[in-house]
Length: 276
Length: 86
Image (cartoon, each protein chain N blue to C red):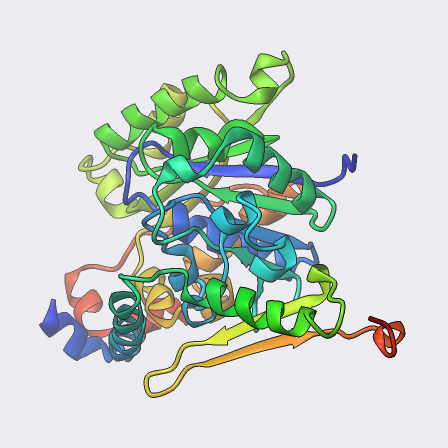
């Protein structure tokens, strides 16, 4: 068994916090750093990773087809057209999550370990079967949270599950957990309208992987079907994901303070100025 | 929101709309028979396998869903020793 590859779950409990965007962006950033990466969509029935990565027109087979033996793994993998070391394994759009079994997922993950350095499991929201299977075989976890009460509460619940329901936890092995704070607005935090980074870190008590500021560049990248590290590498969000990927690769990169957004007037007239 | 878009010249929204229109048209059309491509592949491979042995690991299936036409490409590697056998 190859021990070099890492299985990383991107999870949050709550929906809409940026799991899929972060899976695609971290996957692209790791691939741009020369790693062989596959991003696996575990959201059976509601797949979206294909759309965010711009591969929606090319999906033929999916995770469920491979688990059930209807297709071979290489047939279901979609290689990114822009970065050749980046691949996608889509979720099924037409089945329900009961189509996934623990044994089947274990087999696919083992097969992926032989081909890739990084296997990024994009978890569905919630704590049901799909989310459980996405984290089940993880070596490390990225918990995505927004600085907002319900997101932080759900993240705490998910951290508890990472510590009890994963194979590593059951075997008494260590499972690294990292916090990725997304949709952060430094201006609002400074004005006391939003929890600060330190507040969330104190509550959740896991190390910080990065801070992704709330940014229209993220929506633009998703509209275009391109991970932001490819679409707009100079943007603050892309730099946050690129730095996060470097930290995952063991580099010692300090987390820089998130830039404050411009005021209303500059936002209305000159958004591009800040992104350039 | 539309005022904001107007001022900031964000050209990505039309791309998003076009991508979604193509994708959803295909997904709605396939709602009755979601596994059409899988069925096509299986039947095509069965026909070819009658004449030539096929290694399923060497079959590459590519699909490109377009607005007007879609293309399905199935690459099947036929080993040399297959000739003359059977």
